[in-house]
Amino acid sequence: MLNSSKPFEKLVIASHNKGKLKEIAALVTPFGIDVISAGDLGVAEPEETEDSFIGNALLKARASCQATGLPALADDSGLEVMALDRAPGIYSARWAGPERDFYAAMGEIERQMQAKGATDRTARFVCALALVYPDGREAVFEGEVRGQIVAEPRGSHGFGYDPIFVADGQSLTFGELDPAIKHAMSHRADAFAKFVSAILS
Ligand code: IMP
Image 1: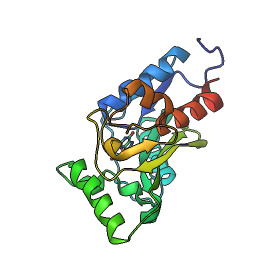
Image 2: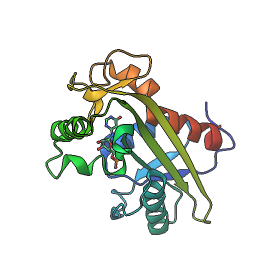
Image 3: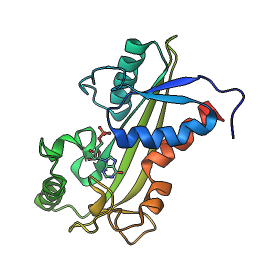
Image 4: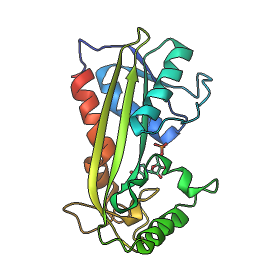
């Protein structure tokens, strides 16, 4: 499915995460686009100082685009728990602390929900994507998957908050589901489908 009207030859992925780079490369290389990681080009990761997923994705994409002179794509994602006024939200990674202890972060979600006497267990994973071109054009896309928070973490697949999230229509957590099933319905899949349809198709 090589696209003759591809919008660029090279795309910088504004992430130092090898897993993300691989996932994004698999998605855009069928369109004849080469991906390079911002880390490999020596671009420093900016501090995420904005107050929204879109804001932080834009900040990262702008930094990579400015440093390299190439179109840059960045993502920012996290979990919003409605009863906690959408926390941990943009702080999802930071709630796990420097040790990246997501069991502590999941425990904290349950502790705060119980402290509030929350009966609403609805939540969503969100993924924002930002594409910034050297001529200043910008495009943003947001994907989501809605579901419920379970009290006890279940399953060992995935990462982050997967063991406490059950997507609508499922009975297993993202930690228990076959990873291919999760990937097909995830907030990232949703955001990337919007990116591909608007930019690459
Ligand atoms: P980012 O890499 O700055 O976008 O951080 C996203 C954080 O949100 C991760 O560290 C996880 O805590 C959480 N998160 C994002 N996507 C997922 C997912 O698919 N499953 C579980 N946790 C996720």
